[in-house]
Length: 252
Ligand code: SAH
Image (cartoon, rainbow, N blue to C red; front, side, top):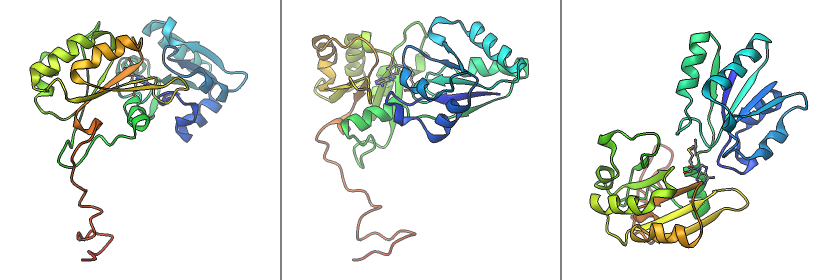
């Protein structure tokens, strides 16, 4: 059995109880060494064999799982954040399917949630934005043409940009081309929930300059939209005293 487990954004106590239990019982752990906090490995048993996937190809990782399976062992594949976001899990699952190896998936706290926590943000403020666009600039992995930053910017919804810290001039240019003003609030969150977490409030126009001045080149998220700062939102209807819900009668 292989468990794909979300490690959370960094802080070791932000893994789920289920994920921690899988780590505690694993015979083999393959963890994404570039981003998973190694302190999570302290939950593992002494007899557990640990591999760093940053140094392995897809085939090597699957080979480790296959060998473990043949020996009746349990493998945990530990991914940063939540495995469903840029986790490259589908390609692993497809190969496991071919080999008839069973697997399941245990969610984790994605870094975009860790980043909101770091800034005490609500991404979905009434009348400001009710949607969160999770996207990236293209790098070695291409982004489909219909998903350009410009086209997403046209919605003026909250946007969280992954994997793009080295391309901030271009990101700003595309955001502005798509319709955001240069002074739209933005934030850069570096290593959300890690001990060396850093947060910077800036604007669409100053993203690159902010990263440069503060030496931020990787492991960061860019958050764009009015929810980042001083938004004139309306209160939610759900907690409005004059509004009845299934659980509460209106008091006015
Ligand atoms: N599955 C992960 C994302 C993996 S892609 C998740 O759900 O968070 C790797 C990218 O995620 C990094 O380049 C960076 O943009 C972002 N990232 C991961 N951990 C982060 C953290 N603690 N703080 C800020 N960004 C992070």
